[in-house]
Image 1 (cartoon, helix red, strand yellow):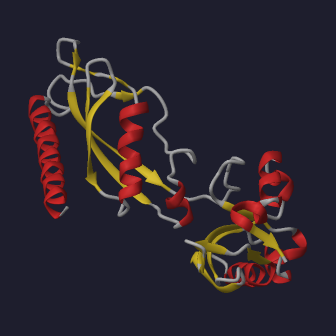
Image 2 (cartoon, helix red, strand yellow; image 1 turned 120 degrees about the horizontal axis):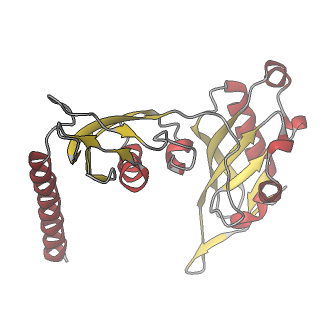
Length: 253
């Protein structure tokens, strides 16, 4: 088994080296998108990262930053080989930036001195900024979503207009009772975080989990959403939020 793993690791390393060499060769064959007589390329569509581009786990963990990409703009304006020139600090965001550029970005290509389209190297920045919004999750989403009602709001938090999403992890004992709840990602407001922990601890429990017929402890992930305008939640998501306690065997006490 160890030999098989080592062979796989060696093959994976070789693939990475070949991929890097391929980009280096392409990069060397393509000049920068600047120089005497060269007309630089111009973006032909929006390159801004949208909420759909954000990896869900990055949203939950509140990962933000700026990814600088270096890539080839081909003669037809599409993006060819791309790599991370400067990391955002998150591999998830960096990978999403590369995918977004290659799949979606388009340019009016650079033009050489004689007016012909020119394949060339270019750099661009992707800014990843988390803005508060109600996460859009389908009824088939594996995430457990709890939409808090206005009556659940801490009075001071409601008066200050605080909103946010708190990601919590709940440890359930062998008999399905909530034993411990921790904040995995803060909303940015201590009172909303504390209220989330309190509500999950007091109001949720689960059916017993077992492995080979023996009871086992279970860890459950929850997104606790605090919004002052619950009506803004889409109908299908409100249904999902109202029934979130049923997902994964969770039931309100």
